[in-house]
Amino acid sequence: MRNGPRFFLATGIWAAALVVIAAAHQVATAAPGGGWHVTNLGYQTLAWFGLVLTFAAFAGGLSISRVSSIWSAGKLAVPITVIAYVLLAYAAPIARYRVQSSRGVDVSTRDPFGPATPSALRALRDQVEADPPLEFNYRFDRPFELPPSWLTYLLHSVAAMSIFAILAAVMGHLAGFLTSGLSPPARRNARWAIGLLSAVAFFLAEAAGGEWVRLDPLHSGILGAWVPLLLPLAELAILARLTQMRRRRLHASAPPSV
Image (cartoon, rainbow, N blue to C red; front, side, top):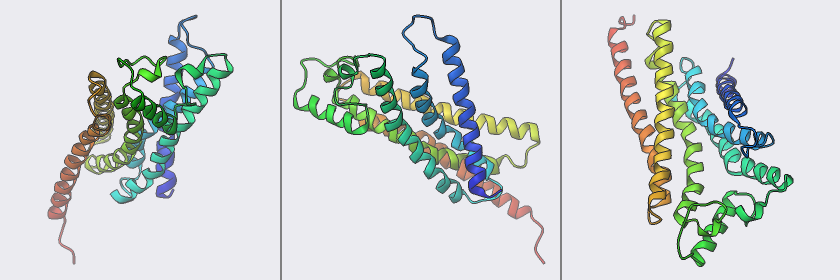
């Protein structure tokens, strides 16, 4: 199998498995009469798939670590980034708007400019900046009182989350090379640990960035969304350094060529 199909197959399988787990958990834990409706599962699945695609790219990079270069992993992850962004920024908000509208929900109150796509969020932010309320709050049923910094964060966090797919794919490629000399059980455990810790660390960092923006309307939404990417970038630098050291050791221990 060529690199591209192998990469996308591994990424898709892991993303689909994670979405199934999330959907099953949602259905199993939904309380009767608790406000959640089974029709929500459609647009939630789109959002979940867009989210987990970025993390599943690690598995794609791992799957081609023995047969391609690190640059191939990064380039193959670009379409994953685009798909994730389209799902998170457009498909899921539009589907949510239509589903809730068909159920008789007053969507115009929460989304006065239509589905919460980037253009609608920018229009709402411009309106709030032009006519600021007496006091900001974070109630989504009162959108004209949301701080502009928070709306900026919502715009940029989707892009930052999607771009993480490229970093995850490269980290997967490096992790595959670094663990290639281990025994099968140790190799599997090490790869699980690197992938899981990388995903959890970035997810928590992005959530912390959002909480930092919410602490004060004067905090920058752009910083809150993009600074968390420094964490996977630092991890990527460490993995790259370890990979370079291992290549040197392998080269030094190799028998001289004829």
